[in-house]
Amino acid sequence: MNIVKKALAITVIVLTSFSALGTTIGGVSWDPDYGFDFEGVSASAYQQLDLGTGELSGYGRVFSLNGEDDFCNIDGVACELTFQFDSYYLAPSEITPFEGVDFFTGGSVKFYVDETPDAPIANKALLTEENTGDGDIGFGAENDLWLELVGHVLDDDGGVDGEGITFWGLNPDLFGSALGGGALDVVGGLAAGEIIPDTQENTWVLDPDGPITTYSDFTFGSTFSKFNVDLTAGTNGMPLGTSVGGLTFAADSIPEPTTLGIFGLGLIALAIGGRNKRI
Image 1: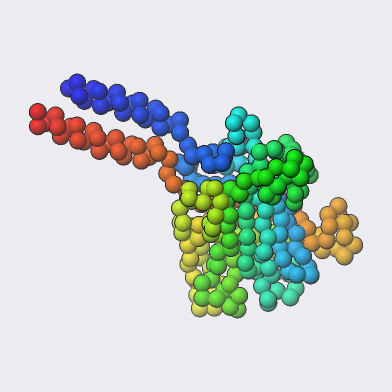
Image 2: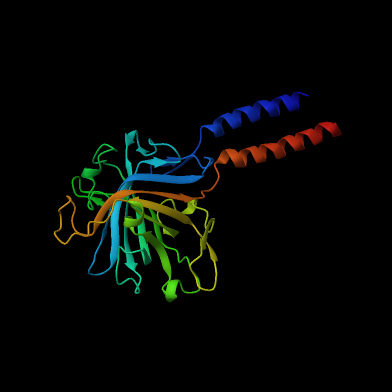
């Protein structure tokens, strides 16, 4: 009986210590047991479509990770998680962008941990290409590459017209805002080892041979304002081919030690129970 009591006491102590744990990588913390696992939200994002090259690029900041807005801290000082994306190109068939559904190929997304936040979380206006990347011009500091991803091909037999689509966007004239979605695969960064690969199901219904399902590491959705396509650039306060908005992303991360610990403690309890029966 004493052995059982000791085991229960140890279990309580261990579970209490586990419950305070989460996952922290490079100052960014999250709870892997959150209802939607690994989920981020950004209401501060900027994008631009170069009408000459067809490249879509942009930058922004994550303001919520697994439901928490206070998720970045290094040695007691608040930090921020920023991101940049580029190398998304209009598919060759897209000769008239902003009409109907636009398809993109390629894509690169990088998240950075910035130890010197530049503005209150609600102030989008102070975000720039410089202070959301790998360096912060205002402080001359190097920002850590937290996660690096590349576009995941949604149609693995060649995409729309053989183009290998990784991202799609709906014409804002249809819904009042530009909606989009795509998929990504992890290729590097401090947190790369925490993301479970191939967990996000993507079903592409536009292939002429029927729906195609693939599995990516990340999925994301975006909602942006209508692109400024007025040739008199800046008439709405923004340069030609730009828009602002936000995005959400989702993935699966490695479970918190609590889950694994409970399983292990269950095995210990069974072993002790078996021993008591033999005594």
